[in-house]
Image (cartoon, rainbow, N blue to C red):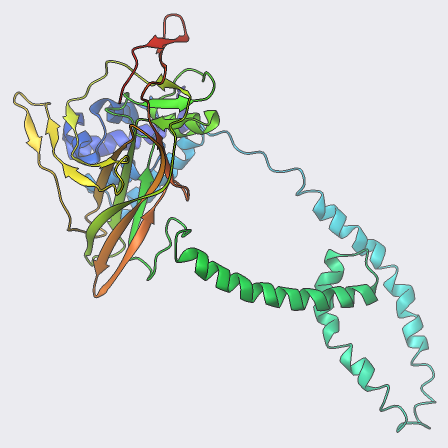
Amino acid sequence: MPKNATVEEFARLVRALKARDGRSYEALGRRLSVSASTLHRYCSGATVPEEFAVVDRLALLCGADEEERRALEAAWTRADGTRRPPVPEPAAEPTPGPAAETPEPGAEPAPEPAAEPKPAEPAPAPEPAPAPEAAPEPAPEPASEPEPEPELEPVRARVPGLPPERRRRRWGWVGVVGGALAVVGTVTLGAVLLPGKTPERATEPPAPLTWTVGSHLWQNGCGHAYLAERTPPPPPEAADARSWATAQGAVHGGETLVRVSVQGKSAAAVVLQALHVRVVERGAPLPWAAYRMGDGCGGAVTPRRFEVDLDRPRPVARAVDGYDASGQEGRTLPAVSFPYAVSAAEPEELLVSAAAAGCDCRWYLELEWSSEGRSGTVRITDEGRPFRTSSLTGRPAFGYDDASRRWVPAEADGS
């Protein structure tokens, strides 16, 4: 990715954090669950993280204060924009402005002639004097119209082409239908939120924690496979995996790695009680070819994680050990089991590896929590949609050859 001033400024701030901490790329990478080479690319400006969460965790580890973290997030936002071209503003927005104004000038001349007849109506003022008692019956009718008159103004502005009588009728129906829809909408929303359509950050009761999700992770920053219906363009940098896969309609092949970063909103401890896996749909594996993002890559650190077998009738998240081979003597990273606590100052990361060998599975996670006498469950999804993993078994596999700049057949993966 070509560097520019915004990317270099972001990289400078990341380098400053790393220098302040003093630990090596490998040591910091282990704490952040990223490879040393990936962290080095962030510091050099070779790439920009797809999510700010990993940089925010680095800032917390290196002792950055709130002001530094805000400046870092602003720099990341500017740098991230260099690889995400701005969406052009829709041309429809300017049009309504003038269109809404043109009727008004045209409407102003109309009220003026209409205003002149109105004084002409009060002109027969001499008649009310002789018949003040006969007027009470017509009087209630004008009294009933002035009250709705202010409410009708917005409707006139939105529907300039309708005559006043139809506007009144339309407003009456809008009021009745709108009221009915409000009641139905409230009931429907409650029904939708409770069983299974909750937004990613909606919980009952409100959660005292916050979280971010990364679902396009690669093993050691380079090992991953996607299933695609058509031959895709060359593989992207790992940081751009989400946008690349979305553009191709690609699906995780064989395994999906999900990183959930959880943090409390205050100093009060929030205890994470359990992590559950919910499969919402199973289908036959996709009949698409597999495209590998890298071959022969390896890493010194295999982080501890939760492994999930999506082919089981009731999948569970099972904690497994990691391994650190960066030193002269390798060492095991013991698995961490529930429950454990998080707070605003002590975030935690959950790395979930979900594998499928015989299905095209759609699934999500549920995280149980408790804090200060309250408890609840948060639903972890892929930006509001279930995660998706499809088997690679028996699918033709391809790897990208940099020399010929094309995808070439690779050894089949039976996972």
